Amino acid sequence: MCGIFGEVSLSGDCLKRTINGIGSLEHRGYDSMGVVYKTKEKTNIAKIISPDQSKSANDLYGEISNIEDFCPVALGHTRWATCGKISLNNTHPHKGEKSYLAHNGNIINVSKLKKLLGSEKFVSETDSEVVVKLIDKYYSKSGDLINSIEKVLSLATGANSFVLFNQDFPDKLFCASKGGPLLLGKTKDSVIVASDPAAFLSRDVKRENLYKIEHIVAVSHNSWEIIEKKRASEIVDPFLDNGKGDYPHYMLKEIFEQPQTIKNALNGRTELDRGNAHLGGLHDIARDLRKVETFHFVGCGTAYNACLYGAALFNRFGIDARAWIASEFIYNHPYIKPNDAFIFVSQSGETADTIEVIKEIKMKGNICLGVVNVPDSRIATMTDAGVYIQSGIEKGVASTKAFLGMISVILLYAVFLARQRKMTIDTGIGILKMARELPKMIALILEQEDKIKKMAKKILRFDNMYFMGRSMNYIIAEEGGLKLKEITYKHAESYPLGEMKHGPLALISPDFCSVVIAPNDSVYAESLVGIKEILCRNGKVFIITSDDYDFDLPLDNIRIPALPQKYEFMYPFLTVIPLQLISYYIAVELGLNPDKPRNLAKSVTVN
Ligand code: AGP
Image (cartoon, rainbow, N blue to C red):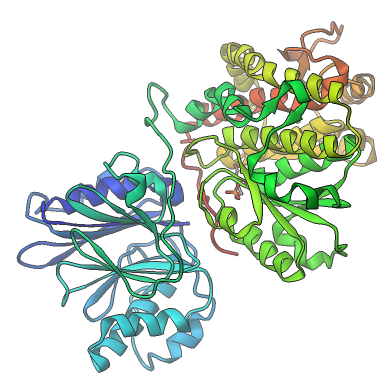
């Protein structure tokens, strides 16, 4: 969470480049933005806040009068508030005696660090200001800035990264990381530091010129000095991103990219003649995986919903599995057998709650696998092996295509592991062939955009609703409900449809609507019973169903392509699409920006 961008360059263009840079990181937080920049005469600072998500980095220009001045160093920050409310005083960069600091993370022992500053007065409520003041305190005593940074870095607990500009070093930036994401990239005339590969997309940074900061690095205009090299430099794939293109929002663009998302995930990984998935990332560990008794999926939010799908699919294929919400895992005191393996699912690969579980499982010595999107992210590097989902950069805070990428890769895992066990070659061939048809089917659903938009407009009048389904489509009800809450701020609850009669039915009235996912699968008849129970209580029902079933109920419906019943476990790939579009269009109708939902950030790097 929070985006940091800094640049050092003799071109003198660092201010504008830094404003652009933090603009490219807004998916990490957009509560407020700030920049500190050096000009010949002085060090300047500009800040704006955006509590209603109306502003973006470019609005900083309104606060700057000397934009054309020669600027060899600048440092910017876009904030997702953790420590202290959204206010100008809490906006980064924060100031010490001589240093300015942009910070990402959470200092868990901030009160202890504060005590080291005695009676020092603070302008902000942030832990970041404590860090910069403490560094400057040590620096004024010792005259050694690196040592001072090192000391504070070792005192602070929690996953953190920060970049610091000190007025005694007018042509340098100092970068530090203790578990927080921070990358360096060299361009032809500058060095950039950023908390996310997205910042390098529009710049001429070559992959071999990227470095992941593990400790402290001093950066100048054409080089950097690694103060303590813990690990050889790593290559980060910054993906290819062409911006929003003709789409008004990243979310819509990413929804429409989904036929390609599945192709990317399956590409080169389906061996039709052997009815198996070819997963290079699991090659070295395959023999150990054959011995695993139970697989535990772990993730948060949308990634957790992908975990629910994974557990259901594995069980259907005869492999024992279950899904865990990462932030709840430890409290459950789960009994882990020596032969159990874990599959950590994450788009960003930086989610702190998920990382905590990896640490716990590594301590126990069980196998840790990954299903991750961002290459070389923490989860990708901490796990023993894994498979990238290859969805490309996802900028919408509400995850869409990454979910599809996750369940695509999970389907490949399931085939691979089931083929190791009891699945026949013919079954494997059939599943993989069917999977390769999914992109076309998704494209057909996307062609119904106008019809889905009309349904969204009808749902708009309801402030409360249920999302429901049976079997695997209950999982999609969870994902649909999460999307709706995230970007429309409407109240949605997700239930297995069969649970209605055990209590939730009490809420049904003409002012309460239910979105039911009921394709013509093996539980369709039961789903219809549930729908009728709602209708006879005057509840409003919207249904996502398949195009092979004629029902005589007067329901607003979206039809998706039908699947043969033996492949009904692939319906989630299709049923999720209309739900993403419904939430998107409700948000747009309400005048909300789906790319910047309030209170949220793309990567949740705090516990
Ligand atoms: C999804 O729309 C969310 N914004 C959020 O729930 C997200 O899925 C969750 O924070 C996990 O993120 P990760 O996939 O990067 O680990």
